[in-house]
Length: 489
Image (tube, rainbow, N blue to C red; front, side, top):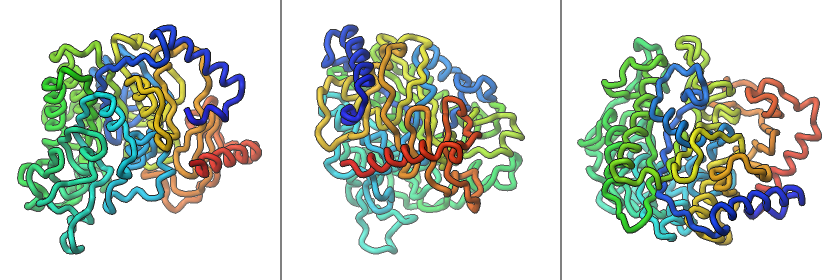
C-alpha cells in the first residue's frame, strides 16, 4: 500500500495487472464484497501439526482438513511475531510489532487509544464486531497500591475493565485477559468480570508425569487468584460455545465479524475426555484435536445459521509450539514440520504458520498459494473486503491486501515488500536475514552465540545453510532495508 512508491516499474506493472484482474472479476476496484468474517486464532500450534502441511503428522484434524479442501492453503504465511503479544499487535494494527517500543500488558493497553484496529475498521464499515477468547493486549491498570495487584496485574474488579476489546473496536466480548497459564483467572463479559477472582488455585505441572513433559509443557499453569466459576479444563469448550452463540444469534441486518482467539493448544494442555489418548502426539496432540473440533463446531453453526457460503473463515496460529527434539524422537511427530525452531524463535518454526481461508462463494476449493503474507496484511485485506477505499494516514502502514490472492491465486503480481519478524530480522523475497546472535527461542540453547544468519528460503526452508560468509553484500542490503522500515513513519 504505502510502500508502492518503493517498487520498481516492473513490479508496478505486475501489481497493475493483478488489480485489473480483480476489478474485472468484481466490476471495479472499490467493489465491496462484505462477507461475514470469522477469524479463528489458535495459540502455540505448529506448522507441522496439520496434515495439509505435514503428511506425517500424528494428529487427526478432520475439520481443518475439510477447511483446507474447501478453501485455500497458504504455505508462506507469517505471524506478527513468535510469541503471543507481538503477533496480536501486528494482527490488529497492520503494523510490524517492531514499531512498538514495549509490549508489557501489565503496564496497560498495548493498542494505543485512538489507533485503528481491524475491529474498529469493520465496525466503522457497518459490521457487527464480536470477540470471544484470549485478548493478551492489555487493559487499563487501576489499583492504587502494589499490594492490590494480582500476579503483577492491577485490576479493580469493582470498576469497568477499560482499554480492552470493547474500547478497541469490538461491540461485544466474552473472554479472558491473557493466556490460560497466567493469573488472575476470570471471565470478562464486555467490560465487566463475570465473577471476580476471589479464590486461589495452586501451581500445576506435569513434570514427573507419565509423558515426561518439562516445566512449561503439559498441564502447566501458574498459581494465583481464580474466579469461582473458572475451571481451566472448561475454558476452550466454553469459548467454542460462546462463539457459536454469536453466530447463531447475530444481527442479521449487518455482516458479522467474529474473532475467536482460542487459548489452546497453549499450556495448560487440557484435552477433555473425548480426546484423551486419541492422537499419536501425547496430550499436546490430543489438545490440538480439540482445537480442530472447535473449528468443526464453528462451521456447523455457520451451516445452522444459513450463512456458510457467504462467510470467509480464516484459521491460523499466533506462533509456533513448545515442542523439543526429544518430543519428536518420542512420538515421531514434528510439530513444526520441516521448519527449524519453535515458539519464541526467529527461525521459521517460530512464526511461519498454518494459514487457511475458506469462502465458498469466492475462493476456489483445494487451492494453494506460496505468496508471502503476514498478519499485518489482514488489516488492508479487511479494508478491501469492506469496500473502504483508503486507509487513514498513520494507520496500518505495513499492511498489504492479499484479497487478490484469495480471489485468483494464480494471477501475476508483485512480490510482497519486505516483512520484519522483529527489529533484527527481515524477510525480503526469498531472502531472510537474522541480524542478531541472541537465543533462538524456547527450545534453543539460551547460552549459545548463534551468530548472524542469512538464508535463501526458496532453496533452504529448513534454514540449514547459512550464507552470511558467502554473501555479506546481500546481508548489508537487507540491513539497509530493515533500517529504512524502522526509521519510516
